[in-house]
Length: 418
Image (cartoon, rainbow, N blue to C red; front, side, top):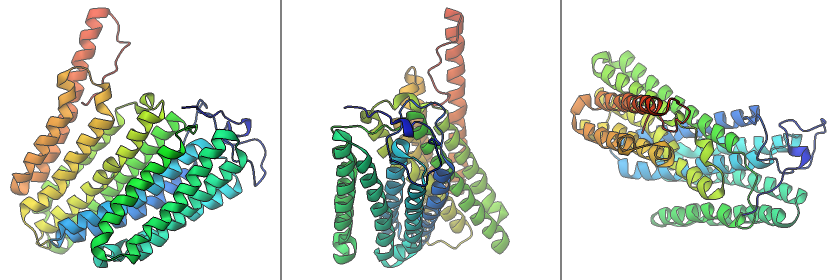
């Protein structure tokens, strides 16, 4: 693939001059000190509102004994949130010129996700996706307008790429209408087909020209959203524990859940951020797989919080499901998170079979914890914490061995977790 070249006007976070409108030209992939902008941070914060609403819907569905339909609805709505966030993130990494029009269109996208968030509960309870679809279309049409603006400033293969993006995004919105015009049994199939089509748009658009996204910037953006999602997990679990203690005086029953959840969240943060993943994001081959795979990382991280809420509700007698089922609401997304982070991050930085096996074995042990009754969550938390400790120990031993053999510790590619 051919990499795009940076325009001088787009080579810094604050282009020269203060005109309200500037050319939306490509930025440079090798820019120094490229970091997330305040607008991007605001964008993430607003998007997590929709993530929180999806989590609430999942809690109510699972706690009410409708886990199957709840998980399906959660997967569909989380896809809409994640896909709109991801498309903006990669576009901004390549084309953010921070002028007035760019900001206004981004704020329109934020308004779209807030509309989507307002329709989440209706989608869960009545399978009515009308409001969710309206919010999604607002976000995606705004995104298409950004691509058309980029096309206006580009030439040749870059212009073709931007036009392909805009047309592909707009055509997909027509397909999504199937969620509101077709009967209920057909809607899951509409989602599956349209999700695949949406994900094919970037592959087709960039087949002849690669956008100049910035590896450090992209890894930081994904890391920041991971922090926000994990933070939402902590907030949701804390609120659930507080409600249980205040209304049911059940501190004894809830303390193991709270402690286990905290250990899981701490381990989740450690495992993700110990890896300098930007070094692997050098081309679209790795970047597409890594970026798309974060649907599982983000979705499972948010689902851990929902699972902790379910476990709390079961412990205080407000959930219509067994202890094992409530425990699975925590352990299964935790195991999925561990495996996803291993597949996308950690395995590329491991040396030796022992380091490679830490996270897969931890995921298996976390699933086994499901059957430990009321101690399942605290056991899963302890297992997750031990995985971190094991990884740190293995890395320290390897570093000591390298230092003793060569007299240097310059090459420390391995991560503290597998």
